[in-house]
Length: 626
Image (cartoon, rainbow, N blue to C red; front, side):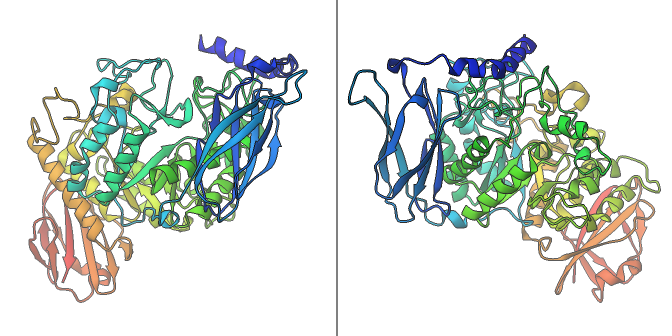
């Protein structure tokens, strides 16, 4: 069924120019959409593109009369149902509501009828341009809204939305929403996290699997099953009051097959078309491969991510501007402190460069995180701004996901040590940080919504979880925690993505296990949650974003590293052995210096650094040196 529909979409380009010659009667002219729905005065870039969609709208003559606003140009694409207007807004233009006039042609009438469409110019919030993004002093908490908490059961199923709620279906919609997230702000505050990354909240009006949010059917609308725009803005305000930033998850590589424009594309080059359905080969490595076949690169960049996810063509200049403005609209509207961009390598590099430059023009301190899901360090580093390699992607991306280190953390404590395995895996990954322009800008994590849960990967062993989490919070980069990792949630990738995205305990009124109430937890889960809070405090109050990291080659099941910053020194000892181990501080004098005492952060136990001492089995020690 989907393939049949795709074939119909492929025929759209063939029929496109037949359609535009059919003509539309004057009485049918109307406006159905104008995007973006509003804008702001005082932007650094005075230009604004407006997409206007409506039956026969291309036949009209638009005009604008408002002090300080000039209609520079009108672009007609050949599709009679679209116009693209380019406005210029002078720096001193007053905020207010203007009207855009569309004069419709009428045969035999001297004065054509005029369609009046309102458009609002708003004043920018004070300090909007200087909003601070995230840094290596932050701890980011990531959640899937449909699986986190159901604050408003009335919006679980909404008229006009194709998929209804069905919590018994692991792949269905479960009812989590914006109000549920807002109800948990106290939980976020108590844990100490500094930024909240929410998977996409945009309308996903797909027949199935719409809960994840990665197949948008409207780039300007919150999915009503998550709530309203006003609820989203209220959430942003409440987070800001509690010292927590808001990171929006965006997708510009593709949209949903049911996106409103898919049955009537604005231009013939709006999406990538193939004679038959062609999926991306997902081989991002081909982009920097000096021997790569051009056909492999084309399939990587222009193949569809999935049957229900048409691949957007960012080389279409009208679409490129549309997407850039969409990001700015959400930053300004929702008070965002950061954007996480999905499937970064799949998007046209020339576009992403312009996109980030445009965002930085308006918000110099704003942060953009690109999802760079690659296996190797060199391939990942290729996407960071000013990479240290001789091959330069031209990318101006600062923050990117560190999948190589995530894989290493999952293996390091579970696997036996070998020349390159176990703890040595961590050492080898970090030893390649010379490839990055700034390793402290890498997003580090142990799991997320696409990979196996960390606790499951460690064989449901709390001690191994503790070692991995302590490493995550005491190494370089910016730690990102996937919801539920702090309470030992389990999930097997072999059982499908739904197993990685189970409902957060206590997010539904009838849950027997509740995080907020501390009800139904095992002893290990309570211990893990308390340790998580300690680790967040350790991270946000520590020296990791200012100091220098020094690590030592692992030996005999023990990995030692530390941080130094002026007179402050921190020593981390990770013992993966299942028995007590004798630790000799003498080898680490270049880090400990003349310090003679180490105070363990978690227990406040004092260790003497002038003689060997015993370290407990499968335990981390974090020593502040005195």
